Structure formats: C-alpha cells, structure tokens
Image (cartoon, rainbow, N blue to C red; front, side, top):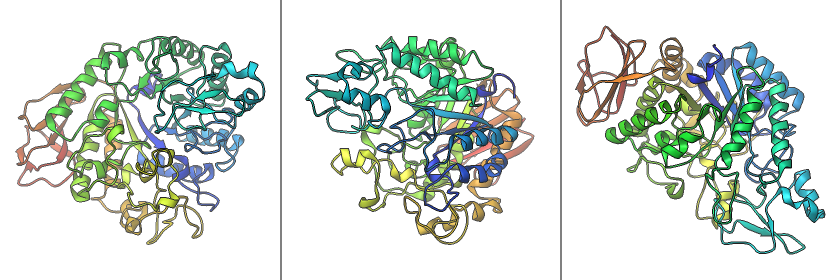
Length: 505
C-alpha cells in the first residue's frame, strides 16, 4: 500500500484477552493471536488495532497502564510483541497499538513515587480539597490517599489522571511513541484523546490539547508512514474536525455514525455530515459499527431503539436477533462501501450478539461496581471468540479450560469453523466484501443517487454502486451490469427491506 495506506484501510480491532488463547489459561494472548494471523490475512484486513497489552492490574481491562514500555506477562513478552509485529508485516498487515495518555495506573512507578514523595505529585492531579467532578464510570472522580490529599481519576480509582501541565508528562509520551515506532508499530490509537487538558471547571476538549497532538505529529513524522488515530467523542463536528487538521491527528473514530439509529434520514445525514466535516480538513473518514465499549451491532439493531448512547446503554433491552442480524449484514456493506477507512471489531464478522446474561459474580467491568451494580457494562461485547467445536470453549484455547468470560452454548452455530464453508454466513459475507473492497473501494468520494426517501444509494469512484433499503417494501434496483454482492436474497429482482447490494455499472 502507499504512504497513505491509512486513508482507505480495513482495520481489525483485536481485544487481546478475548481473541485467542495460546497457553490454555483462559485468557487471550500473543501466542493465540500469532497463531490466528493467517485467519486475519484470509479475512482481508490491512491492519490490526490492539487494545492495551501493557503490564496492568486490570482495573479497567488494561487501560490502567503500569508500564508503557513492556507487555503484560499474561499476554506474553516484549520480545514476542516484536515478533508478532514482524510476522504481521510479513503478511502485509500493519499494526496499530493503543496508548493511554489521559491516565496511568496506581501501580505505575510514577504514582507509587508520588505517594511517597509529595514533590513528585505534580505529574498527577493531587489536591487538598476535591471538587464536585464525577467519574465517567460513576461515583466521585477523586480518591483520598493516606496523608489526606486527593487525586483525580476521571475513570476508575486505579487510573490516576496525568497532569499535562507538567513537561515530564510530555517528554514521557514522546519517548513512549518513539519506543513503539522503533519496534515497528505503524500507528498509535489515542485513548480518550479529548480529555488530557484540564481547567478549574472543565476536562474535555480544551484548546491546549491541540498543542499536545501537534507535538505528537512531529514525532510521528520522524518515521515513515506512521499514523495517529484519535478516540474523540464529541457531539460538535466542527470541534471534532480540529483534531484532524493537517498538523494534528491523521484520523479519528467516527462515533456519530456508530451511534446513529438504523433509519434512512438519520444515516444519510450522518454520512453527509461526516464527509463534509472531513473534507474541510482534508482527512479521510472512518466508519465504525462496534467496538469493545459498545453493545454489539447485531443486538443493537434488533432493539426498538437502534441508536447508541453511553449514558443510556439499555443493557439487557429486548432484541430481535434475527432482525438485528439482517440489518447488521446490510450495515456491513454500507460501511465498507463508504469513502475512507473501515474498522471491524473482532466477532463482528461472525455476527456475534451481545451476551447480556453473564453471571454477576463474573463481571469485571468497573462500570458494574462503580454504578452500584446497576449498569452491567461492557463485558457483554468482550466475551471470547468461538473458533470451532460444538461446546465451550469453542477452540478459544487448547484443552477444555474455561475462558475468562463464559461463552453461550448457542454460539456453536457462530464459530469460525461452522461459518467458513457456508456461502450464506456472516463470515463469508465479510470475507467477500473485504476482498472486493480492497480492489474497488477505500479512499475517494461518492455520488448520491435518489431512489426515494427510504433508500440509501450512491456510486463510488470505481463505478461500484451501493444500495441499502431501509423501507418497508422491496425497491427496484437502478440500472446495472451485475450484482457483485448482496446482504440478503433479492425478491423478483427487487431489494427487500433491511438489505444491501453492491452493483457494477
């Protein structure tokens, strides 16, 4: 791929704990991931984004980082991570790793030093008196230490926030970026990218954060073809676009599209706004249907309310999974046909639903504990993948050891093994779509077609036309030479409800 590979890439998100277990301890690891690299190559992805793999007490699934220059022993070793990067590169797959700059871990050397020596506390937010800020995970955003001071944690108490007014913090992260770029990482995904800079009254999207990313961009530009990807949840698209100016981040996740309900007018508005927002700064859009923080798309699209809101998660809300599966297939073809890069969260290509009935005593998401056991949280989208067999652990690891979260027995119909040879499976749809996308789609532009208010239709630069019917009645297809791919069967040559098709002109 070119030096702008990231503009049109298909990127696969690996949640390492739940992808594949290489040693049989029930937890996914680098050995398991390395053994499954051929699967990802066959799937047709251009890059892998991994959630944090650093040493961590796991107060928040590894987003509480104790050491940014090493690998959590449960996952493997630093040497193994370097080997993994080399093996992925040999298959033509780039690697994006997660860096967490807003907060550290209470187990980190810096924080432990701060507890012992007040003169070192300026790297974090220690105060004699807390304010009224609330944690994003619920409860107060301040925790008191033994000598009476309080430290800020916008997330879990195990995640103390860095003070970016301190130059030590800036230098530390410049060094961390170079550490991983020197080891072959092709990109950095920046967790909670808008939260780093704080004032007396606010902690989101303050102007000073852009100076940080300008300096990070200068570090990335010291290397060839290295990128910065921001996790930026902002409702204001003009503010969002500022992170994508030519001297800041290369791309950022498009959460407006992810959160959009399965409705034609809303989707069209989201797509058009996204394209206009990114065009204004010359950045490529990204298209995301799900990730490790969000209820799985098959379940969301089967609910009465198909939108997404972190503040109103609707965990456990009833879902028509057959309807959700049909819509998820159509949404996959829609997302992959749009200009820019596309992200696939592990298991999305298998059509996995959210697991809402995890026993309470097995839940590990801090949202569950911080909410007083009222918000089940994100464990339901993090259940280990089913690879093969008729019963758990479905080939997740060697032997019959139990994975760290339980897999539903009915997933025997959704394993990679069960779907690989089925021409009508979700896995086959993804493999076919990603192959065609690599040949015909990616970066570029689109031209909208008017096929009625309940139909999304557009033609891409290559001449491929995507049509999605979100209405109640079948619709006639526009003139075309051939049907390349369809998410469901046509009815007398017409496109049924909740179905998408790719056509050649």
